[in-house]
Length: 86
Image (cartoon, rainbow, N blue to C red; front, side, top):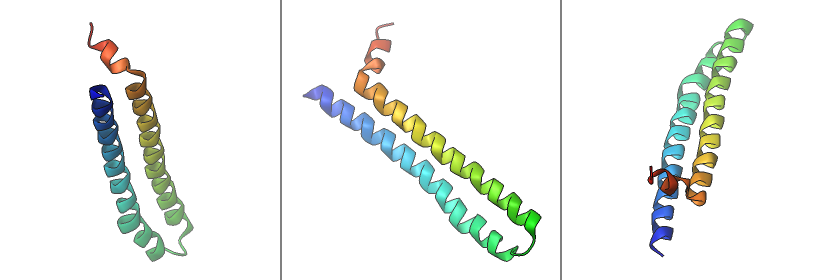
């Protein structure tokens, strides 16, 4: 029973960290990039650069989700406890 509680806390912490990073990236996209794209409407090079810049943030979000998935698998598998033996 106690291990389940520890696992749940670790999972909750992983989710919270991932959501904070994803929220920060999305907030940046919403409040900084989207207004810049609308202001520079008509200038193709600037819009292409800003879209590329936005794709970088979407890649960061994808990386965070992949890391979250790996972390949750690690918690489920108990690999963390195996490492404590050494």
